Image (cartoon, rainbow, N blue to C red):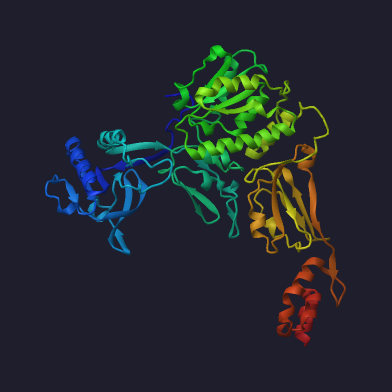
Length: 527
């Protein structure tokens, strides 16, 4: 087992009983069915191809159904499909599976347009297209996929940290956007991760801003232990030391070796070596980091790593560190990336987070490492200037349109991290602490006045970032009857404007809104 490869300590079991669905055009599907029967006579095959039922030379273990499959979902041992029976009608194809639960165990998709489009396909599904070599591999593999197969549960989900939704309002959906297997789906205010579809790409854990999704390793801290061990074995760490992190797919494609003076660490999958680890590498005194993207890296993982790297590069630049110390490279370009890092000028003597400090969760850990790097930067007047980041970044501020905000504080109840807080008494006040904001969008989406906007950015000053600052404030309006302060002036003005058209239907008319609840009730009862 390669270093960093997860051990199957927890997971699920696929149960495959040998029922195969083959879909495609008549000639290619029929020939594939004949060949599969020659290789594995015990497989039970349902053949879906227009006109195939008219063929008379198919093996008896092949059900020549005909028709065309129009939808498919599932995984090894549990595929379900629909077959077109009329121009505008489709029915469950499971009756032809031969399994009591009406599911297919394996799928050979020979359709011109593959039935599944995700970049990482589920186990048990093969779509070789016009590639004869890929078809031969599929025909070799299908007979081997009967029986029980264990798969580890790669991702741990902590719903209490999730910012996907709150009170019926939709918020963060970053993990859904990057999942290459479509294993993550929205489930009300939280998400669900299908462990049967998840193949451990780790992209969701890299993009999750709160740490609600965490990549599982054989034991807690194993990846950190691998890094520490690798750095320790290398001897003295200096700004000239370069760490090259790659996965198994890139291992044999690297033209450079440790003779180049670089340190090499294999991590599978590559996104499991997260942005926390990137920063930890620099804090430990390594001069730079090269992340090697193999040709087989899923597009979603590639784009995500590139995005996160640019985000941290922007932050490093604001800290006075050369952003070129973080590099992405194809295997053949690693030597060039190493040389580029050696030409940078990132300040050495990084300061590690203080021992015993309370670092709980991903956000706190990220900021502790960033501040450790920032402690070594030169003060040049930029310390308090915010750095703009790209849309989708996990750092930023909240902007409030004071002309629209009624100080209802709905946003404070939606905020999952406590970045937004406030009070109604003795006067309405909305406060914001930027260090806690993960830009989940819940406050903006749930604001009844549409008064909130998000601004991705990084504020380098820890003091400014951790200070609660005022976003909006108001004074209480006094009851028109008893003089008791009871409602914010903005909220009252908004209520008056909204209800003016319905004043004739209100007991006491529009002026009753200017009274406190006790006086309003008294007036209504007394007429």
